[in-house]
Image (cartoon, rainbow, N blue to C red; front, side):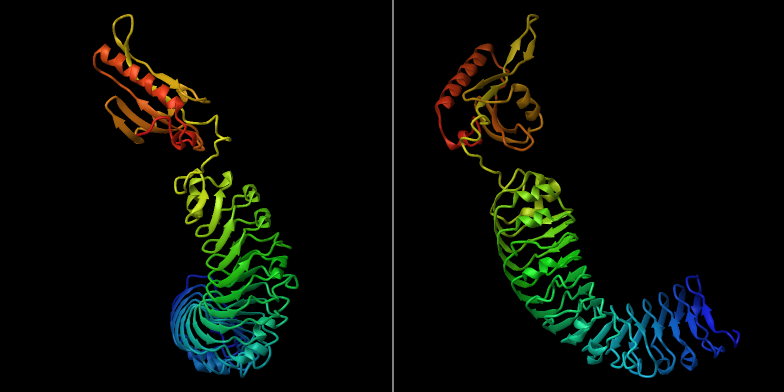
Length: 482
C-alpha cells in the first residue's frame, strides 16, 4: 500500500479474508471496504490515521470489538460499520474529539450504552444503532442536537423517557424508536420537518399529541402500535396532508372516530385495531381514494357498514370482533374476505362463515322455496324404463326444473331428511344464496302400482303444504323439511 495513498475505495467487490492488521498509508482520508465478505477484527491501525475522515466497513462479516482508538481520531466525520457481527461496547469517546456527522452501527451484536457525546461538536446528522443489545437511556445531549436529522434506535433495550428535543427539533426528519421499553409521553408540539415517526412496541402513554396536525406538511408515516396511548383520536389527526401510513393500533384509545376526514387523500394504510373505539364507522373512510389497508378489528364499533364501502375493495379489510350489524356490502362477499367480519354476532352475509341474512316476507314473496320434485321411472313405447322429473308448486316461484336439477347435481352432500318415500335435499338456486329450496327425491324401482301410490302421496303433500303459513316456508327455509 502506497504511503501517499489518500482514498481507498474497494467497495462492492468479492473480497474475503481479514483486513491487514498493519496499515502503512498514514495519509489515508477515506476508506471504503463495504459490501464485501471480509472477516476478522477491525484493525487498530485505523486509529493511528490522523487524517482519516471516513471509515466505511458495512455489509461484511467483521467480528470482535470496535477499537477504542478510532474514536480519538481528530478528523473522523463518518463511521459506518453496520451489518456485521461486531460485539462489545461502543467506545464512549466517539464525538468528543472530532466533528462526527454520521454514526451508523446497526445490525450487530453491540451492548452497553450509546456514547453520550456524539453531538459534542454540534455537527451530528444521523445516529443509526438499530438491532443491537444496547441498554440505558438516550443521551440528553441528543435532545439539544440541532443538526440531527435522523435517529434510529429500533429493536434494542433502551428504557426511560426520550429527550423532548428529539421530536421537536425543526431539522428532524426520521424518528425510529420502535421495539424498546421507552416510556413517558410525547410532546404536544412536534418538529415541522418530520416525515417518519415509528415508536411501536414501547410503553409510551398519554394522549396522541395534538401537534399531529396540518402543520406537519411532510409527515408520511406515524406508527405507534402496541403502546399505552389513551384518550380520543384528535380531529386534527385527520388533517395531515401527506400521511400514507397511520397505525396507532394496540393501544387504549376510546371514543368515536372524527366525523369528518379533513385530508387523508394520500392515506394507503389505516390500522386502529385493538383499541376501545366505539360508535359508527364513518362514511368518509369508505371514500378515501388511496386506501388499500384498513383494520378496525377488536374495537366496539356498532351500526351498519356504510354503503360507501361498496365503492372500494382494499387488499386488506378487517372489521372482525366488533358490534356491527346488518348486511355486509355485496362488494365484500368474497371468499378471500370471509374472515374479515368474524365475531360480529349481528352481522350477516351470503358467505359461509357468517349467518345468512333473513329477508322480509314482503321483499321475498317471489323467491320462496315453495316446490316439490320427484323422480319417477316410466316406460317408453319400446317398454324401456326412462328417467323423468315432475315438479309441483304450492306457492308462486320464479325458477324452473332446470335451475333445480343443475344445482342438485352439485348438492349430493346436502341431505336434510329422509323417509319411506324418498329423501329431501337442501339446494341453493342462485349464487348469492337468496333462493334456497328443499327438494324431495322420490325414486322407485318397484312395481307400477307402488309408483302410482307414491305419486298420490306426493300430490297430497303438495296440497297440504300449499295451505301452511310457517316461518320454515315463508322465510326461505324450504318447501319440504323434516
